[in-house]
Image (cartoon, helix red, strand yellow):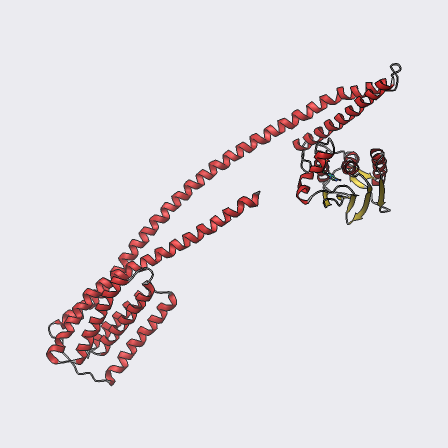
Length: 475
Ligand code: ADP
């Protein structure tokens, strides 16, 4: 029952965890997408301007270097424009890489193809931007690769500049604009990334805050439900206790008049009140038998209610001799079997140790099991075995009766539960085995059974020889 409820819950928790992971990944992707889009817009404006500026020295001085730089800026402008139009969350990873590669080329060629060192420094600044953006847009490992490539690009520009002599060109009036505005543009780019990041962090902080409040609310509800459940449980326990107390006192009150009925009927049967004829004797015998049956039933109910109320007390003593108990048991079993073709066998280990426990109750545990074996078995044998096993004594009762189906075995030790055989076979109450189980446990022992439908049953009782928890009532 418990497992049936637990499984879907577990699945739901896993699905919830997966969903929240996915949601976090999606938020992260959305953030990268926003950073990328903002960056592309800036790059389009700045690089379109730079492409135009560098085209002037080419037009005036036919400088190939200026043309290459101008074309590079034009290329990154066009690439950025296309990427801004086409990038979706699904293509973000791939497109960011394309853009980073194009930007790396632009930055390196910018540093390589101009004559003064300040351009090299500006290209280094551009390289730094590429690394920063790679950190935002890529995984940690890929960002490291981009950093390495950028450094290599810078070194290549540094090394190649003196080796390959590009004809110099003059930017003219726009030179100062390029030199002084590019650091400002770089700052702008960083500010844009910062702005998107702040927005993102703020949104996720708000979400986390809302979630915390929701959790607090749920916790409050849970606490209220728990208190309610505890109160309901306390009420149920109290009414259970009252019911058990009522049953105990009622059973007690019923036993006294019932004993009187049985005993006075016996007197009459034994002719103490004058002679009775055959028919009267037969009827009075029926009264005594029914009275005894009812008395057993009341005793069982009384025991069960005491067990449930936790008020069953044991009369513990040392030296409980199982041999005596087995002698009385077999005699009782024979009287129960009368006409049935059943052999009772005992296999009691010699030198069986005496036990610490309640003699009467131990007898009751065994009698309940044996009486069932006699009741349900029609022919064959009942074998009682007893042997020492470590610091315990193991007793078993094997019969050749109808057996108990696997699915029914859990019912056997539950109060007021009977299997199909039990319901068909006799007027039992379904209390005997539940009482035996509780009594065995009260002795710190155990009771269990092995059975197969149609192949008889074996009940086992294991009792500690001297359980430390059991304190003798008289020492
Ligand atoms: P009952 O008063 O019905 O005998 P018990 O608690 O003693 O109640 O036993 C519970 C049920 O377990 C019985 O009704 C019967 O169905 C089953 N049972 C107990 N002992 C045996 C046995 N030796 N063989 C077959 N069924 C048994």
